[in-house]
Length: 127
Image (cartoon, rainbow, N blue to C red; front, side, top):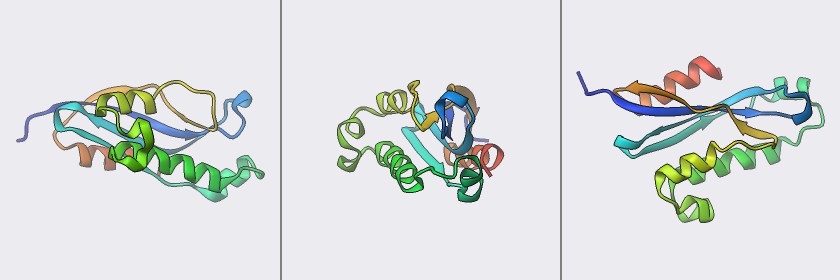
């Protein structure tokens, strides 16, 4: 059995009207320092978002979520934040903000395979 490693995760949320505090879970971000792993998976449930906020700009939301993805990858396409060390990128992505795309509080756990953990959490918390 592979050794268990500490990981952290947060749920990506779309909050159409911040003042109402209503949100839909649309993705998950997982960070495992010991594995050098930082990835996100997301999907926009367009019909559900339209029911919650008919005037929501889904193209803008998609662009913001894709920025999360580019920052996780740690390449030049992730801009200045994407060039930071992996731990700093995770902390920046999960920092508290009052915008349409937010993250939940960060939660810790143990995993043997960070990719499998990302898939499991995505299935449990988003799909």
